[in-house]
Length: 229
Length: 249
Image 1 (cartoon, rainbow over the protein chains, first blue to last red):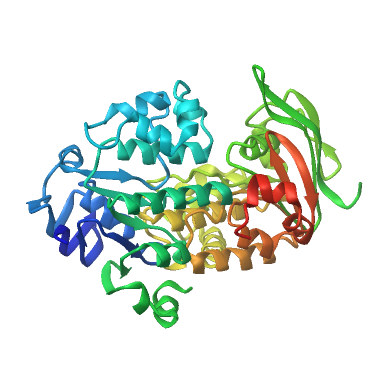
Image 2: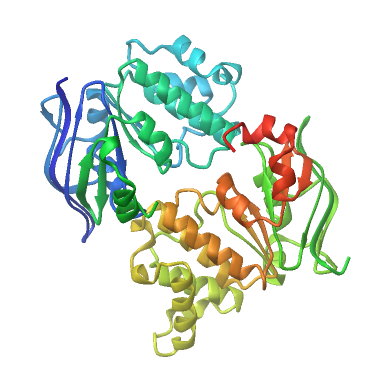
């Protein structure tokens, strides 16, 4: 495997307040990496920094041997990072179809692939995104990110606020994406599912990477210490 | 019914031919947590909006503490004791956590402009707000600007805003969403404490939390209540397992 994303000694600030102090992580091609931590510890800020949505930071973020430091979000997306943001954020005034094609890039993932993955999106392709249920919006946002044919897919709390059956559906889709060798950085509170799915884990606490390892090393003592699980 | 703090009868709302809520009958007893579960898009949040008055229902009635509030506005309903949280945050992003709580406390007392008084003059208010921040485990972040709080911490702040209103009933719309394990446990303990004073109608997809908290559970599918019962009854209901719970429970 070869290195896809490397974050080294990352520090980030929101205005004057420092949110990240020393984040380090690495994702190889085809790997699923889980970023764990309690609320407010820096998981989403790490993702926002990678995606160019934090404007004051220090350290190195290299993607496919290109430095992302100082690069605007749209350029980072064009380089191949697809984000499924926390809170869904579909383009509410666009239809399902418009959402899917708005940022699409040619590649393996096309409309028909997305409709195969989420048949409900095809049924609702002419509906406004705002009229979809929460579960359907989540499917749409995952589909929208895949339509950019990303080299790295980032899923920030993609199963949050979903009914149990829809949550299971989303986990099945993520398992399917794993079989397609898509590189994924995932933040989610469902540790049980992540332990079955992820190749590697990083835990952040107070803006620092405090633990990294594989599922077999993630003991209940470590989970209890850092995650309260 | 004297033991019912909230009694909803025959509540319906249609958008064109689409019935979002269809003859909903649901009630809330004193000292009770009644959970409302159902698939995404089943009509749960619309029902909450109808109860608080931000969406006008077509037919039906809402009785709060033996008073018919069906024709009251959303503001009037909030003043007489209905307090809700939102799926999507309603906090003021540029205010600190403490200022958000104070504003909610002032809103309850109709004295919003006192926010700009000095700390000394507002001492009692600050103490109340600090207590609420302790209850929701946010006292260490009281001076942080709300927009810089994590998603999970903003969820806690939402609940804090509802607590500040000291209502007759709470309507909580997915309060556990985005919370980590410790945050969820904290919220479960908090809800158990507050239900004695203000019963809770709880919309939540975190089934562990629902099963730990609910005295009764109702299930809504396509705008209709299809089952109501205890946690045990709901867990073993085949229809509910098929349409909502799946088989992970």
